Image 1 (cartoon, rainbow, N blue to C red):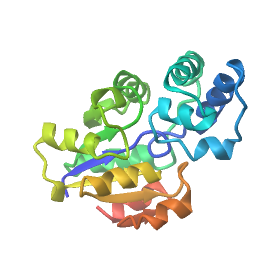
Image 2: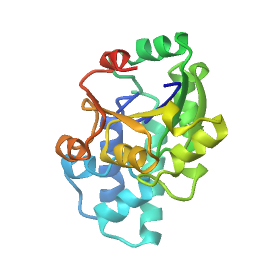
Image 3: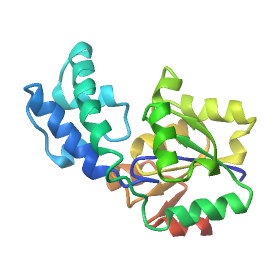
Length: 211
């Protein structure tokens, strides 16, 4: 194994509080029925527009308006409470020292991944970011992983994905790469385990023992 791809929200960073707050704000502000935290959590990992189409049961144009409202709030709050999960910084340092090539495959916009990683002072450890605006087909399609592998010159046998949602696992399976499922994130445990990820961890520090 040489190339390690991470999801961001729910895997590297604990952003759940801010994400949930922004979903509630957007739905209520535009007159839609609010959703419970549990209902919202089941969609985290999908592209933002697709999440709103599901949560608000709306058309594409209305989802675009909800995305705009979400992002206005998100850009205010996101960097105020940005933090990594316990053991994640140490894990990234360890993997870099061991010579692994690291990347992020996230449903966030590319420039937002970049800004957040710089805020966390982790950007220097990563060789590639693939955001939702870098590809046409989003998670759970394999396109993010395939693009990263193409740019890095990596084979599927050399790669592994680390993520917390069913969409991360499905993307990895669709790209024919192994996956580590992180139970500490936002994904539905039952749905994720049903997809039979190759590895399961409850804490970031456990990943060292797999690689």
